[in-house]
Amino acid sequence: MIKKNYEIGNLKQNYNYFLFYGKNEGLKNETIINLNNNKKDILNYDEKEVLENQNFFIEKILSKSLFDEEKIIIIKRATDKIVKLIDELNTKNIEETIIIIISDNLDKKSKLRSLFEKEKNFICVAFYPDTNQTLSKITHNFLIEKKILISQANINLIINKCNGDREALLNELNKIEYFSKYGKKITTENIEKLTNLSENHNISELIDNCLAKNKKKIINILNENNFNNEDCILITRSFLNKSKKILKLSNEFENNKNMDLTISSARPPIFWKDKEITKQQIYTWSPKNIKKLIYKLANVELLIKKNMNNSINLITDFILEQSSETNN
Image (tube, rainbow, N blue to C red; front, top):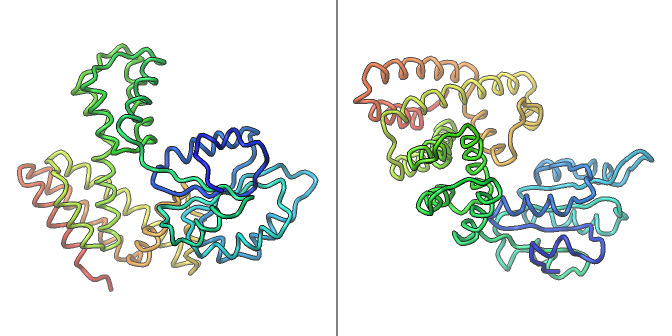
């Protein structure tokens, strides 16, 4: 059954199966919060880990003790592969459990989308990207509630920085609220410094793809961004921190020989969106080679600090070299 996101909170009967698909992650999260009005426990899974332990997953849902509370189970990054499992669960009695399937864009040929659209006891919701008009309304409401004065030009600057992502928008507005509590004037310059999400995201994406040796993606990121000399220090420090995390995970994987265990036991936990590329990085780098990389990064950082005018060339050459180099 097809529904709009704003209809979820007003459903007249209880439903156990929901499919949320599309690019608007912030609106998905808001809808889940609204759906969880009884404050149930929320358990998050990735489709791959569910399918790899399918029998265990079904047993865990069906075996409830007297002390178990109602739960919401979220299965992320879902594809058509999970259709058979949903069909099987639908034959069982899971009245006290809500299952939310989270997916990216699904075309009309998708078996998963078709199942949820046609089944009367299932709810299917599409989450399309927010328009600038919607984000502008969210921003104005937030600023009025917090009694913060910002010019329309600066509001447009904030919205453009967030690339249609309401979750990113709210993060940036929270930064501005915190900044304003100290009585500091909110100028265009301050906003540009505070709302640096897009730049940090691009740097993080650049580093992740370098560690995964995705050279084509690296070249695209370098071509699409105008990093400055100051960014080069941030890139090297972020690269160093990420490499140290991969070293820890690589050592763990070398000991247990179990990639899923390595990922699931990582502390702090690895966000579901980052799991696949992190696995790729661990497979790519042995503890020995990642230690060599960390040593090289320290030298590159020193070179950049001594040659700031040439820093962009230094870091670009280093990144391209690492993406092309074969690890033995």
